Image (tube, rainbow, N blue to C red; front, side):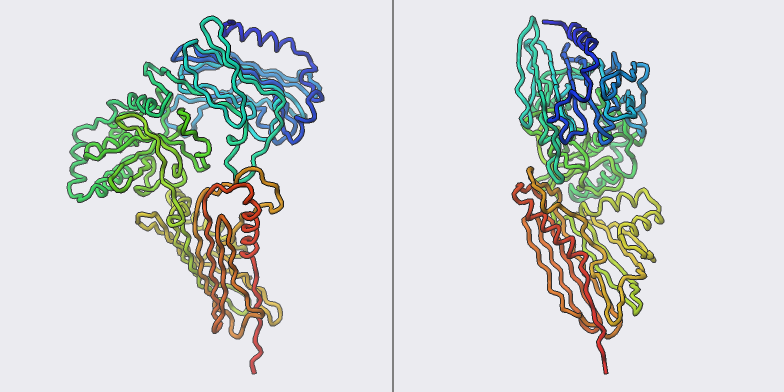
Length: 637
């Protein structure tokens, strides 16, 4: 078998022999340009596992950028830290007819910290902007990368973005002959060709002439339709720690190694813990007291150092310095609970407000985690703790880590579980508004909102960072009422098992009602208009994903100028759908008009054949929320 260096030299020679015609845009088949913003002309990666603690690869990617939509593909970016490095680099830009117009070397790469807000980090990025003024053009990036962190091996993701076609993509990975390389093909990706040469086993994946694809809105995401191969190690080593990723249990054993001895507390803190819990009658009370201590005495700072950023700083470090990252703060809380004789589990999770669960494969163990939280098991319930926040209430995770797989690090190893789902009984927005409309159409109004669960997250987070004045501006923009004047805004967090807030708002709206002769025109739904719209006539291919259930319930009272009645008595609206229900009703008595609106959305993954029904539902809700009512001035003797 050729050595890795031989691979490298053969590809360089091949690349240097390519003539001008190779990157002439006219040579791209019409079938690949269809619906494409860019075309991968050649994507070759040669990777090699050198030992349990080292891998390296050589990459050559030539991509033709057809328009401004995918202009960012002309930017090179590669992460590195103290355990990895870019050994070689060059980039070349070719114009539309394949003539070289610009070249770059390693010295042209810029360098910056990966996390600008980190106190301490090893993680950095080398990057380059190779954009060219005239479209279309081709950018070729060649580089060699080496890493001592075997926890992450390069995946084969030839398309990596929607509306990109692939002319040719190849990954060759060489591993020791007796090494168990783990991989999983997704979405029709081909099986590898496997060959043996000398003391190595060679895996090769190839894709040719793959047309561009697009991800549909409200779907499970790009990773669920694009062909790719996910690759992970079995045994590995990093900075002297040996691990195995073949099963979740074994991976949990590795994390236990990293955390060993990190939860020791100084004697003065042990005494403090005992003082704090002395008067607590239940375990729940003890957890609450210690969680409050954590929130009152520490703050989050991203620290990405050592073992690829996977090992927590000791609990004593957090106690002395009053800060830590998610690993350190969760480990610190674990240590506090341990001193109180309350078992808990350090827990790995892939965090993010996007629906990250779509990208997790429970049947394929990998280090696909980005955050640490804490799980406190109880006989009848489980308490989850987000240890990086100074205001998130005990037991509430929110959209950052809810409803997804997580790995508990138990004394017996890793155990895969799911975090809580917040359904409609948690997620509610209950609003009551009382308004007075004068004879000029001006509305003076008082609005009380009680908002719970995930619906209150953003407002609560902003309230802890923004001034009162900025919160008032945010409130006004959220009401989306033109020509309105905010008179009063107050906000209160309400302690409860389900986190909630109360907002009290007073505002005036100068031209709420339109007056025309004896008629008064009003749009009753002023405060909760849906903006969700689907193309009713679209042809749907993939399932529709609705991520969260919630209920909105509004009751609005309008005091009208005297003597008005409905010109035509409006009918109640009732719309039912697989994914939700909608109801409104209007009544008028003694110059008092009442408007009631209820919208319930049901989370779920719905088959493509339900798309038209769901699209019509949201279209109907959108229209009903903007429906006007005409009132007629009665002629009284």
